[in-house]
Length: 470
Image 1 (cartoon, rainbow, N blue to C red):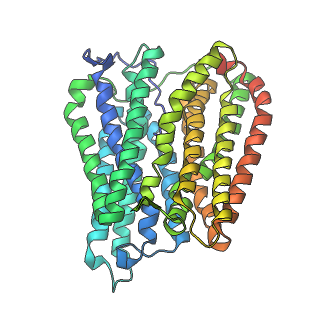
Image 2: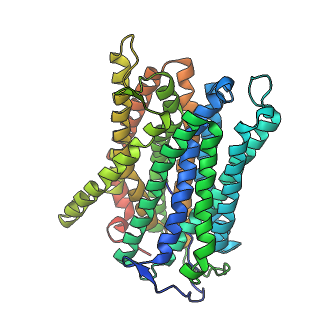
Image 3: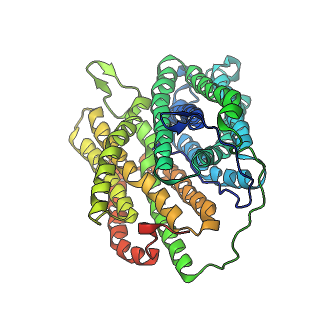
């Protein structure tokens, strides 16, 4: 899941009118294409980096890696990816209260770029390695500072750039939905090609080439944004934050019950994220060390496998969207809570596929096709969960608390991603097959429990899912 941490930044009710640009391409403001282009390269750099992280850290020093044990590498991955989802909630507050959205994007993008430059430098500096046994303290510190800068910049950029897209469509409605579709398409294109290009260069050519490609991608995105933002965005997002004036109406019982539903959905989202994001941790190590990755004489890079769920997502989304539209006309569209249950269940089936791979391989290595099949199911799960949960949270949240509660949903993803390291480390003490069984059973139980709870949750939504509310 190449999730864009789209924590919404609420527009101040007393903000001065903005001056949008009238020029459009294909019926949409050209500013949308500008921020989508910048976001494409941000996802290119992030997805490429996170795909390389664990396999770089655990690669032997003779192959240019750091030679860390799996547990230590998984812990760093868990913290890094978890914070990548959690920090945009803080960034949303900064964009609302401290500096303008446009400055958040500019500062965040430059900070991300600096972080990738440091990451590209660290493995290529031969004097940072001591006797071929891995990096010394200085090399480790520079690499970790690079990761920290990428995290900080991501926290600033992600919520502000999504808010800019919303600001380009003041009329809201279907045109804004279509604009966000273009925006999310750019996100997934960037993620897919980031894994392919950055992953291949890092695994097959040299780690610093992979990290360097991520830096170049981010530089392209920021160059376009910084040179064209004034002309293509007008005044949108440029105004300094203004103190918000919200209704003093206290929260009602209905509000609290809706917030309670958001909390329950968040708990199950943690389970979903903890299972899904094994893809960059334990499953990356599994695919490198345990699978026969040859297809027709070509050894598939580990990072390329991490794009399978993206291609599956691309295929599933239009099919599911058509199905939801048809069911909506019949007043039978499932609740987003059911869709989350189906998504968790899809992960359970995916892990059962991996259990079968480990059970039937005998003395030979399992074929990579088993993992590809599991990742197709992961992509199906993502297409069921992602947009539906964001939409549900925004519908249930009281208006003045909407940014906070949407940000809280992303924090739940961050908590789940942080937990991936502790789950993945179980494979060090048991076996991959044992952990796959545990994940399959845990996801199946969670999916069933959520399905049973959904009718009660729908009562506590008080119709918000069907009509939305302010």
